[in-house]
Length: 179
Image (cartoon, rainbow, N blue to C red):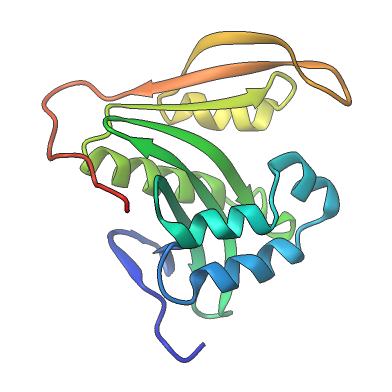
């Protein structure tokens, strides 16, 4: 990379950096990152060219990555759609070789802090009922169960849990407009 990755100054992550994946060369980096994901992971997240195009457009999407400058490696990414004062988180992915080291927590926590600072009042996500590790993470970051989508997932058939994290109090600023 010839340019320095754009850093999100609001969220330094202990030697690692939270970066905005919608600017500069990052959509290309994400494309290569997705190519290295195991097929099963790509399929479960719907990761592919359409995700890269959404990243590059920067319309309603907000995507951040966890970057290790020491290894020049993108460790994971999180993203979703932001509209007015609500966010829908559609993707949280950490490279399989980097899991169980707290990187998912760091990345999602940074993302949520940035959403809060942008005036987002409620963040939604959905998770397989059997994904206990992810559910524990989400509960620990303030998400609560809102609804159950019966038989939402296929292969295997499984319920999807809709979770929400609401921010109370004064809105710190107007929501960030993405164009």
